[in-house]
Structure formats: C-alpha cells, structure tokens
Length: 135
Image (cartoon, rainbow, N blue to C red; front, side, top):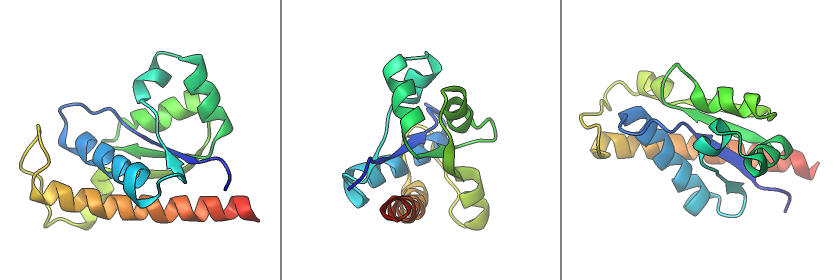
C-alpha cells in the first residue's frame, strides 16, 4: 500500500457544517479507510508548520470545506500541496435539503446522516486515488 491520502477538513469550530466535515473525515480515517487515509490539523498549515507542509506537499490531498470560504482547500494550496478532490458540506446539504441541521454545538440526527453520506463519498474518492497509485 502506498502513502495514505490526506483528508483535511476545515476547522469551522462551532459551525454546524464544519463539524459535519470533521466528523466525516474522522469516519473515513478511523473507520472506513483506516490505513489508506490520514488527516492533519488545519491549524498546523495555517501556522506554517514545516512538517505539516512537507506532508501535504508529498501527498494526494482531499479538502473538506464547510462553507464558501474554502479554508481547507486554500491552505492546502498555500502550503505547497495540490487538491486531488474537494468536497463542500453546503453542496451536500443542497442535494439533501430534507436533512437540515438544527444544532451548532453538537451533531443532531440529520447532521450525523449528512456526515455518513459525506464520509462514504470521501471514502470512494480515497479508493480511486489509491487505485491510481497502483497503476
């Protein structure tokens, strides 16, 4: 197996969409594609941590952003990385309008459903990227 795909979510602390993105990322890294995917704290990139920047520059990266500010995506690029795939929680919500979130500080039932949907999409993309490395 090659290097893990890096899945980097926005920080979005206290924001429902950021929380959904982070939860989906941890589902992928810790459960769905353990060993095939990894993550790192976005704040390390924001602060210019050299080890984090090197890791991003050497990996295939998936950005997971909660809002249109695209903090994860922008900081991957600013750190010398390239984005192999980009997911937006808001886009997922548009596709699943019936799953409105009602909480900000915790994941409610609909937020958990959105997180699981997003995690499955990210996991499929991790598989595609890992398969490309096999060729």
